[in-house]
Image 1: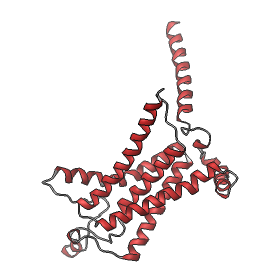
Image 2 (image 1 turned 135 degrees about the horizontal axis):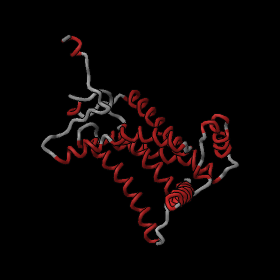
Image 3 (image 1 turned 180 degrees about the vertical axis):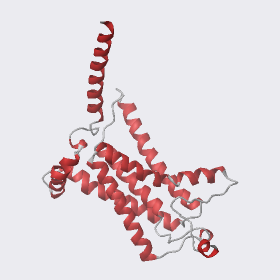
Image 4 (image 1 turned 120 degrees about the horizontal axis):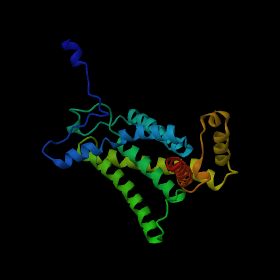
Length: 243
């Protein structure tokens, strides 16, 4: 039994060590787990919305993770000396930094180029809200990256390159698979996207390309349809009660 216990190691995916005397360290330990929580969010959104853009973003995220694993086993760069006591695996590039770099870059590109939020009626407020979204995504990415330094999981070099690789992947993946296909539907990228959406399996799964039709991906149209049906149902129920 003792022999089996000595063979066990920590699951670093969710095991985070922090400085118990520092509230900042605790907050960063929680924030550094956020990329892991995004994976089930991807899955829920993909299944619920059947939206091609979300599925495509998730696929790119998984490819980024695969590339990170390949790079780590290629360069075999150790983690900081202080973190070798509680971590397994290599440190270059930082997977968390690369994850958030890809996530924020893809999403910022999508919001900037294609997505349109519901208008408040004020151009100033609409633009201000978009800026807040951009800054929020950038700040989230930066805080996760900083948490890897503060918690001694990575060196600045490993975090920097993780961010750079993630940002490049996020932008390039979005441009090639989303932007070019939307701007040039007759291009190779556009024809590939059409073939994916129009494939019998995609039709059977009821996949859709919402942003190809609506600037908000169809959220407002769905809400209006719901509200129309809801008001009709409410009117019918109210009429029955009166009679």
